[in-house]
Length: 499
Image 1 (cartoon, helix red, strand yellow):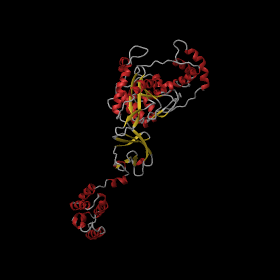
Image 2 (cartoon, rainbow, N blue to C red):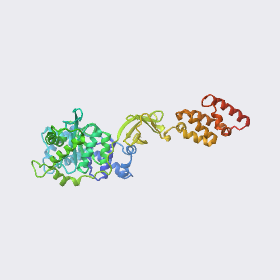
Image 3 (tube, helix red, strand yellow):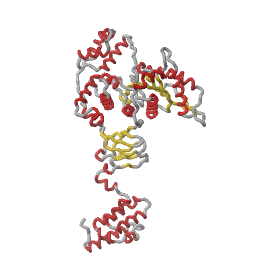
Image 4 (cartoon, helix red, strand yellow):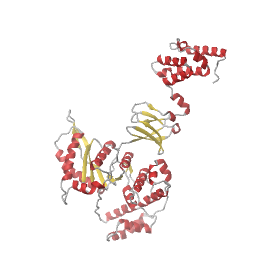
């Protein structure tokens, strides 16, 4: 996929790594896109008048306008595999690497596939040749994570019923330093909570996080361009790291973390057998003690232990933790109703958007504190989150001009309007609302008084409020009688307002 179109999340990721000064080769590897793709977007970014920092601050709507996909023809895979017979022989020579072979291939086929695809096809070819390689893991480069297949259990204090819980494992491959933690489920909040606790426990952020194709992490698995869940992308953005999903049905991609899980079955699960835990906190305290013992045990085939290696090789090379804790954002799509509102399904609460977007589908991003609404990557509304069911949060500026006047109706509004006419009318408004159990019951009657004032302002202002109130509220039809009396008097006096 030398000319692949990458997702907006990966585009921001490439931008961040270019800003960090990483090589294009490392960007290609860590973002899992071809070197040619990285080169293409790097050229677009560097040739743009805005700086990389300014480009990174753009929202997705503006960024997608800047990048334009190109179309190129590529040589066939048959030609590629025809090159591999010679490539394998060259690979056995001192100093010859896959990067060297790919450079030669690109010289011969300038429009050929990118480095990551080239390596993938070459690895498949080598598997048929039964050739394997030993990889050396770099310090602080990756954190590998997974859930154990077997469950741990909490016991209900009253009934004695056992409830299964998940066991999350993280390992830094260079030192083998291991983290373990129990959680209630593999759902996104629990998964990201464990991952955040793991990063906090090691005291820094690795260059990349390698995860299995778990549902809370990966929305769509792919050999070349897996699509991350939005919350996982937010997590990576917050911690300034890269998420590398393993390839489906490729156990070697996660061999280290699976090996760690098997060891912890012996060093954590077995010692916990027969012990009773009534809370997650109690269980995790016991797990932390056993995992610490595991990290302090000496290696079997070399000097030292995992903790010593971690503190010597990796701890200082981890990137610093962000100043603020990660806040989980949730996502939802909705259609804007004719009343200029969308419904947040979780709370059944309505939030306004500008009336121009009525009928359009929008994306809602929300946290525990706020609700953000986007259309085509552009933010069109933001509200404080309220969890009151079936209620409305409305920004009057979002409403159509014909609707804004009615939106302002309230007891204070009508009293204020009455005061503008005169003190008698102001008192009348107060007396009207005082007779009803709910303010909205008086809205139409107050509006009727304002309509009279609009045409017969002087007469309405001069009449004492008791004149209108006399029998008016107990017999609402008297409103028409009072209106006719005022009309006749004012018309006869020539006092009709010119307004």
